[in-house]
Length: 361
Ligand SMILES: *Cc1c(COP(=O)(O)O)cnc(C)c1O
Image (tube, rainbow, N blue to C red; front, top):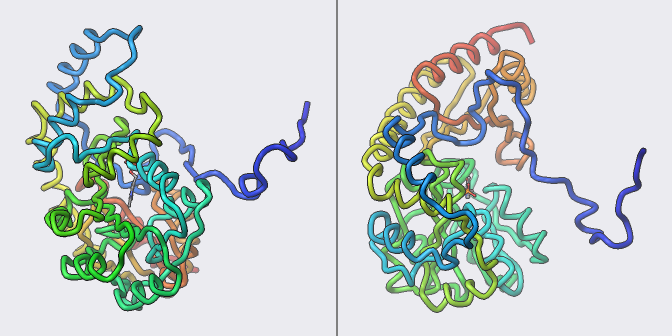
């Protein structure tokens, strides 16, 4: 039996778009496409997690304000009191909540994280854009000019930016907050690998919000995003949030991580930073490959002489998945994005890439 598309009652703009692509991949595929950590937490964590999970009551609703989790996250990760925190089922959910709560257009500096646009359109926001500079840094003059022209309610910046791996500077964020009167969001999903944060500017600029996630530092399956913002902003967002958006299993697991396993996560992050620099060096040695320096857990690489989508397909044929971003934006022409894996995985990727580029076109 076939059915027609549900036209006439589903929103026309939703019928016209396609879902965010999350590929189903064959088992055994080396996934270097989604910025996951290649490292799982130690066995001791899994044992403790099992004990925690065994003790919870699934018949009761979880703590809707996640107060215990906020307390420990604030203390251990951000140095903030719980009233400054807004939590979500991944930072994607926080972006959705924030966009639902804002009025007027949203200003993005493209190329950037593609979910911003998807979520903006889903929540009925219009998107206006400024373009990064030729060398993929934030062009603050262009951004502020776009802000003066379009009067957005919110500027969304990713630092380090996905997919360029570049940080925004403190002076830049400070200047944007001084010259623009709406909300400013700095998405620091890759903060652990960069170390630079806009958080210290929040005191001077209460409209500045900082977004974090546990996903990229080894806990993607937990789905926990954290927004650090002025308590007055948090109070408004709480009106838009679904009452029990953070399930109890996530809350318990995250509390356990903060209490006992943060040093493990931190040492994994340090390893990934080393592996990133190793991969940058080995890719630089391959003719026709130009990796850009990165403050994140991925590298943007420019391929000379070959179509990146052909290269990505050839890698996929050999069981290695990376992201072809070459068609996402004119500035990304010729570019692929690869997540940092283990030493063995990175060597396999670099060797396979070198072979593919050497082969006949
Ligand atoms: C991956 C990513 C996110 C989404 O993180 P979740 O917490 O897993 O939803 C948000 N922002 C940027 C820039 C990302 O790359």
